[in-house]
Image 1 (cartoon, rainbow over the protein chains, first blue to last red):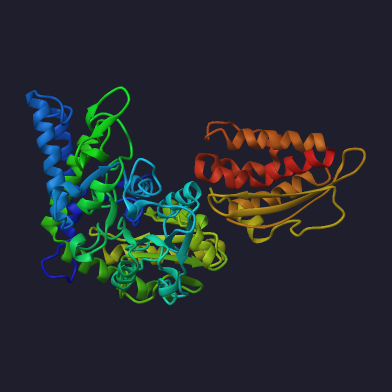
Image 2: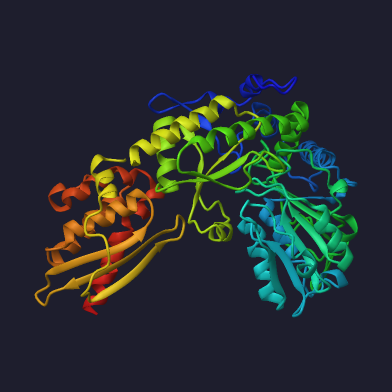
Length: 421
Length: 140
């Protein structure tokens, strides 16, 4: 039972049947890999099953009962997600297949001859700013953009403590900068980045700003209007929703000014053989049959998170991470990569064990204790290079995790050291 | 998966360290986990493998596999050792369904359990693929 008032983790665990699973050999499952992908509550699974079983039709084009029920449910999911992140308008919520697609969508708006808006013009001499702590999905799209346009890619360094190093902010974000795109919360370090100083500088020089919020939206109340940035990307599967559905939020006037990303059905207004006009946003960016049931599932996930309360979830995770930050360093040779205090950081802890490769750590934890962690570079290879390590072991917590599971992790790590000692 | 023999080779690697003389040197990496291995071979005119020396970093499976390879290949012939490589590769790529030929594999049979973990097969094969590559270059 958590000490957060009104938050009953045992009751929450009952909503996630997989957490009661016994793995081969009688090991109970200890799932500490939610930063990778979260588990799904019965409410989400049931909503999707019900829709597929009784209401499914294509959206936006079928005139019959099923088509209209699907369309209503799909668009209601958009309303729920808009409200969940404080979007000023529901039309600012674009469904994508994941956060990567949302990031690529924005990157393809720049230097694109189909678009005419000055803010998205890009060529040699222009600059794109990211950071050294990014997930590959917030690095590679910008590298490709730089290659296409001749623009220069630059980045914020990371401090030894695992914080964004903003000392060079004034020089790094300058009159040549067209877009700044950084993680709201790091998927490796757990660091929650302070947006406002960077945004203030971006505004000063007339640059746009995007946040990769894949690791923050699931874990804390995020209000896009309050953040004040221009674009926010996140994904369904990390927030108790299904995979195959992601979200781009963007300011209406920017989305209007951007060229389409993928062309196809449903994104058009009218088509001639030699040209087309496009549907208003968000449909302009939703070519083809979308992930209908996945969007509806994400709507149910948002309902679930709202019912528990995002502030409660954040407080519970803060307790877990504070507990883990106390317990883990007691293991000899364990080095935490990232902030060692539970301040401005989320429930993701990456670490190394001296002399033992993370793959061996992860394998023993799984084989012997049923503990699921992630090992490797977590799609953030440049960050690992910065710390001079090939890989880390990462434990990431969510609303359904308990301090007893952190105790199990600590016991497991002691055992790993015994095996390889 | 972590057979005693694997742990033993990991903790006490045989033949580790790069040595001279050598005919060919290769550097192989496993990009998904950062395992790295530099490996050298020295072959006599009659096809006898005089030395397999190596250095690298990585998980216990990749490092122990290099150590076992050193033991099996050094002192055998190019042809003999290539048939061990072939059998080892067959075992590793067999998804745990392949019955290993212990007479051919010797100590390397301890890795049979690794074949059931697709993510780790690359670790076990790293040194063996590097060896095959080095032999080809030395003959080339």
